[in-house]
Amino acid sequence: MVFISLSDIHLTNIIEAFQKAFCDYAVKFDSREIESMLKRRGFCQELSFAAFENDEISAFVLNGVGFYNGKLCCYDCGTGTLPEYRGLGLAGKLFQKSLPELKNAGVRDYILEVLTSNTTAINIYKKTGFEIVSYYDCFNQSITNIKQSPTPTINISVKRIDNLLLEAMISYYDFIPSWQNSLESIERANEELIYFAAIHNNKNIGYCVCDPRSGDIASIVVDPNFRRLGVGGLLINSVLSISKAPKLKVLNVDKDCRSLHLFLEALGFEQGHSQYGMIKKLD
Image 1 (tube, helix red, strand yellow):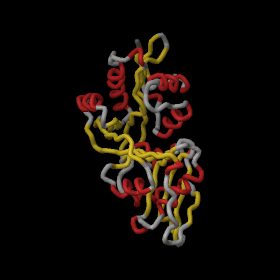
Image 2 (tube, helix red, strand yellow; image 1 turned 180 degrees about the vertical axis):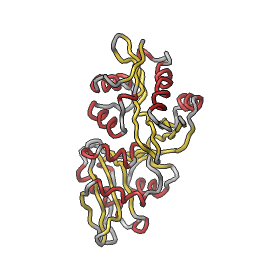
Image 3 (spheres, one colour; image 1 turned 30 degrees about the vertical axis):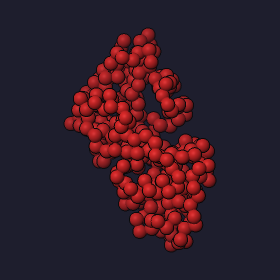
Image 4 (cartoon, helix red, strand yellow; image 1 turned 180 degrees about the horizontal axis):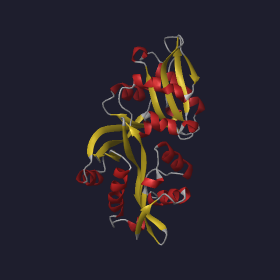
């Protein structure tokens, strides 16, 4: 068994290993979804590592690198072990191999998310220096069961916009988005995402960013002065009109953000799994 960087490994082989490692996972991933996910999350092959046996990947740690909250950080895009190699501690060894390389690259924090129900993994992460810093809820619903929003009580139009305008939406945030929903992550997937703005009196009062192929809503925000007027619902209606996925999903909603929870529930979204956001300081 050898442990090496994935810098010279073809992406197709990495995606194949990802699919094998998560073959018994509740959610199935096709190759396009995995490639899109890795791109959006800043996957860095040079700072990702795998265990190889007979030139085949047996376990891997896929790291994304980028700026988050003003610091150069690493994000765990996916850690997995193929079924026949589980129980050998390979993922832990790969993580330890990652740390000095990440530090040398100037990374200050290592970020990951873990299901709140996965107590075994949470305890392992805590023992290696991770701390829980956030709690997220995830929502989804079939597009046929999402309630159409009533006509807004004020004159509003919705139009497609260029993503360069999205920095303006930061002032409408109720919480700091998780890594994959951050502005930098959204910009990485620019050509795959659709951007909408709600406009009132020539002013953008709300924004929505979505992936029509996966149904993922990366961001939906409304100016606090124009909430409860049907703005958010009109943005969701626009997403429904172009979605090619059977479901819409909104991942990593801060558990304390009651405004977004209530909005999604009012439209018929159901709460699914919950996740902890964890951080390990590397500096």
